[in-house]
Length: 83
Image 1 (cartoon, rainbow, N blue to C red):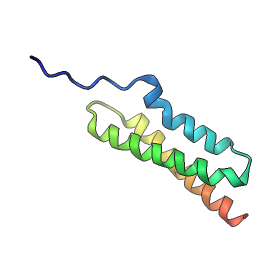
Image 2: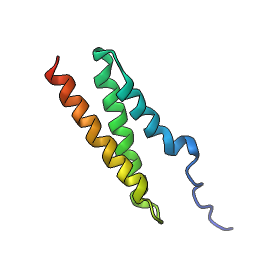
Image 3: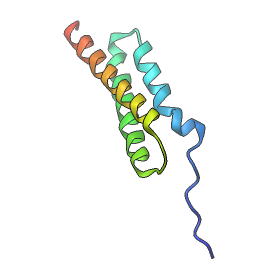
Image 4: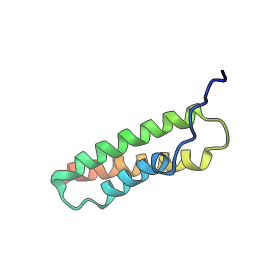
C-alpha cells in the first residue's frame, strides 16, 4: 500500500500566524498586548519551521515572517518602555 503524504497546508493553517500577528498589532489594551505578541511570535516561529521543511519558492512568505517578527519585537520594546 502506498504511503500517504501529508496534506498540503490549508489556508487557515498558513494564515494562522497572520491572524495572530494582526491581533497583536491591533491590540489596544496594554494588559493584553504581551500575550498577543507572545502568541504571534510562537506562530511565526512555527510557520518558519514549516517553510524550512517545504520545497519551492517561499521567499515572499519568509520575508513577511521576518518583517512581522521585527515589528512585533519593536512593539514589545515600545510597550515595555511605556509601561
